[in-house]
Amino acid sequence: MSTAKPPMPHPTEAGNPPPVSSGLDRLDDATGLKNLQQLIQLRWIAVIGQLATIAVVNFGFGIALPLQQMLVVLSGLVLFNIISQLRWRTRRRVSNNELFLALLVDVAMLTAQLFLSGGATNPFTFLYLLQIALGAVLLQAWSVWTMVAITTACLISLTVFGRPLPLPLDPENGLTSPYMQGILVCFVLNAGLLVTFIMRISHNLQERDARLASLRQRAAEEEHIVRMGLLASGAAHELGTPLATLAVILGDWKHMPTFTADPDLQLEISEMQAQVLRCKTIVSGILLSAGEARGESSEKTSICTFLDELAEEWRSTRPVPSFSYKNQVDQDLPMVSDSTLKQMLCNVLDNALEASPTWVGLEAALDADTLTLTVTDRGPGFAPAMLAQLGKPYQSSKGRLGGGLGLFLVVNVARTLGGSVAAHNRPEGGAVVTITLPLTAITLGKDAAHAG
Image (cartoon, rainbow, N blue to C red; front, side, top):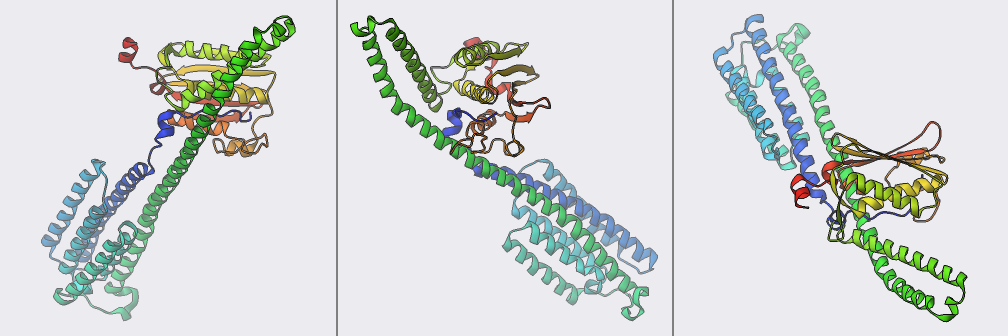
């Protein structure tokens, strides 16, 4: 299939494209929640690691620790993590200040544990670097530098006020030294946690950036649709006057003696009048779509009636030798006859006819809460590059300058209705375009149906 005349977008979407800022807010919400979840998981690992370290040092190395006080601090960390978990379940946006506060609590808990277990001589003081690294990834610049200042102040305080443990500082003994073993464990723990959680957080940020790029692309495409809608609307207004003039002239000619005496001229004038009337109908449809597609000119109908009338009208106005139409909608629901939807479907059918002049197929089916429209042809099919860029502007097999807007607008109209468009080539030859639309976007509610 190739692209043909473009349908007009839904007027609400064309006139007021959704702002990118609202989509960005949703992305920031999701990313902040994911990052908070990473901190919660990291904190549970810290709780388990502290319990294991306290047990090994106190009972394994025989170094007396203030167990009661350290367990109180650990209980405070557990309580804070439970509160953080409950906060995460609210699914509300996580701000920079909240993440900053959470990391400050972690720093405070770490400082308290270090103070109770050797102060600055504790090899696990290097865990401050983990908090700074996480802050550099998660926080704004002022928050990160504040974290650096606070952790530096904490380390200085441990140096001044901390009480060293009765632990021999004998690095000359290599790995047999408990101090060197502690430094090694701290390094491995720092490295492992940094790699694991910074990779996860970076992945969250990359997902946000990818979704943001998609939103920006969508906004650009919808802005393109707005420009196309304004152009089509302006052209339709300009064409209205000459078409009306032609209709009047042809009406006068039909009653002039010179033409009434010649049956052949009468037939030609009638054909010209029919073509002018068709042009006026097309112009009226463009203006309707550019203005109020569901306004006063719209009519209440049903899905089956809408599809049957559309198929019959398309068959009678196009030179198609064979048109296979299958309506498998078993539940006929009320809807509004929408010219935008009609033009979108006619566009795909016209594309199929241009690619396959001898046969075109249309099938409609209802599945749960979704209407599926499938257009099939027996033409050469889509080129792989076109399938990969389906819905992108100026992707056409016709080679015309400015071509390729048909399927671009079809995809965007379907998307504004909450649906989607997919395409693939048939093994036996030809192409299939599938339009999927949610019923909520095209049908009337029960109250509206009864009122109508």
